[in-house]
Length: 320
Image (cartoon, rainbow, N blue to C red; front, side, top):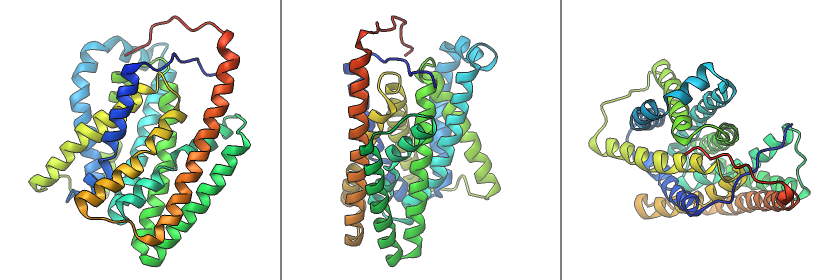
């Protein structure tokens, strides 16, 4: 496998984008739980409305780039954009219903297993993982078993929600890995427009086949959908996608972990949801295992960066 291109050091704008993204995505699970609409319909609307916002700019300013991705030399990157949209649709189709079946805290913590699955993806790509990564994966799996087992004793519905949240973590890892590859050359606006557009189209088909109602909601639900578009989608996912050009998927993954306590606090303050005490030990082990995975991967990346310091940086300007 060819070595990944070196990235420049993150600058102040990237750091601010990441901080804003963490705060924005923390609102996702509470808003989904609050909205009086099917989770798949909410997922469809948040992606479609995001494309409505981003599409005109992309068509006006990135027309040549879009042509290259469809018929020119960038077709490989275009495929990464499309596949990323498919993975994002699978993520929304699994995780958003989980936030209605289990607690906000459990759904958010279980989807935060994303770094674990990205470690396994890296292994399938032929990258050797440090022993610390495998140790963290083991701890995280034990935590997931304890957390889902606790919910199973409470209700089968909560257990099903936990399993969907874990599946959502797997799919978001695939989405981030594909996005990292696409963002090497593709601009943020073009990538997010294609990705969200593909995602919205797939979710529309799923909603129509499953006869999920796409309208008739109350005002509060539409306001929650608009808050998801402006917050979790445009200021959350899009800012993470922007940062993927300058920082690794592993770094993005560890920052996404901060969504778990943020969503739990919002769920408690806004919805009055306190995590069931039986789930707390498992969730704590889960997050500890994920942290071990991320920290071990970061140490390996730092060692590789020190070795690569003799290689001159690529002077090619970065896309926005």
